[in-house]
Every structure is written in structure tokens, then in C-alpha cells.
Image (cartoon, rainbow, N blue to C red; front, side, top):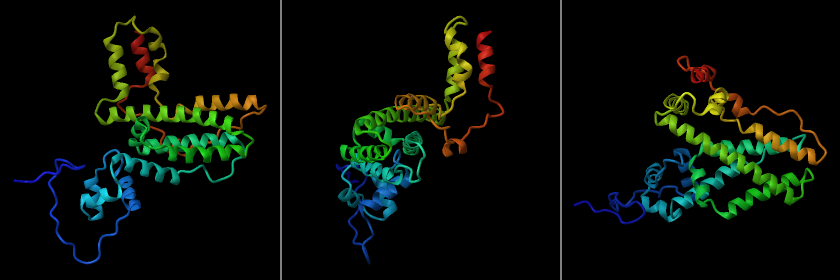
Length: 264
């Protein structure tokens, strides 16, 4: 009979306590977090980490108690690696925009962090550290902490909301149910005179751009600049957006063509 563990990895066979020969394996909390990020936070298991580090699962749990703690540590590590842009910016709006882009890219890189945010499992210490960094940076542009806090909340709302939407679209694509196919199917299934306003707006709606949220972000920043008697400088090109401009697939019907068919 195979014994089963009642611990964190219940259902997995117990590993035999075989004495190790030679020097003990190098393991630390930092090494565990590095391996977790390398594997991917959305699919990593403690058993995978143990196998990668050459230790027992129980050893990993001596350094990291559970998955929530692992996510908090990983979020902190990713935040440290994606601090506010180091180079000088001529205007505060450029710094705020790049900060929003960094947040968005971090969440797309590790979708599991969105789930951790929604569950409140990231932890207040990390949130306060990141907030202090942002408030201090904006203070150098004359923003009192209270105003910088409002800007930080607005940026977070846009970036996190946008990342959540993109992750959902990508999940549909991975599941074999592309978002644009679902939308077209819905329009076909409904009566021709149903959803008239949606059909009129369908062309731009189907031209999906993962970075569409940068437009409302700029409008937000323009409003703040106006209250300060300033004018926004021209927008800087986002490196990640420029590198990932999607190309139309040869067999894909354009949004405009879909809209025309829907209006017939």
C-alpha cells in the first residue's frame, strides 16, 4: 500500500527519507522564489520547485509555508526588478505613464498575481513599499502626497483592469475559443435588428488592442495637467507595445468586413 501525505501536497506519495551523500543542496527562500518565477506562478507547484532544487517537498515548506506566501514573495521580487524607470523624465506625466506600463507588463507576465491581488494575499507591507516609492517620485515634481495618492489609485485602476481583461482574452484564445470569434457568433445568432448600437461600433470594437487603455490614461493625465496650468508633452512610444503589434492573420476577416456583414 502506498502511503499518502495529509500535508500541503495531500495525495502525493511520501518520499523515502534517504540519507543524502556529500554537501547538502543549496536552498534558500530566494532560490525558491527564483525557481517559482522561472517556472511560472500560474502553474508552479511545490513539488516542481523541490525537483528543480534537488530537495524533498518538505524542505521547501520549511522556507515557504504555503502558496499565498510564495506569491507575496514573488510579487515583491518582481516589484523590485520593475521599479520606477531609472532614467530622468522631462515631465511627471512621462514617469506616471511608464509606471503604469510597468505595472501592466508585470501582471501580464505573471497572471497569478492578479488573482493574488483580488484575494488580498499580496500583503500590506509590499503595497506600502510600492506606494511610498511612487509618492516620493511624484513629490519631486511638486505633487503633495495626497494628490500623488489619487494619481496612483487611478493608474492602478486602469492598469489592473486592463491587465485582467487581456488575461481573460488570452485565456479564451488558449482554450480554443478566440474572443473575436465569440463576438461574431453572437451577432449572427441574434436578430438582425437587435443590438443596433453594438453593430455600429463593431469595427473599432473588434480591432482589439491590448494597450487601448493608454488613451484614457493620457486623458486622465491631461486633466491633471490642466488643473496645474500645464500641457502634456507628446506621448512617448511604449517599447513593449511597439514590439508586440499583432499582424492580421491571412484567413481572418477584418473588423470592418464583419461590421458590414452584421449590418446587412
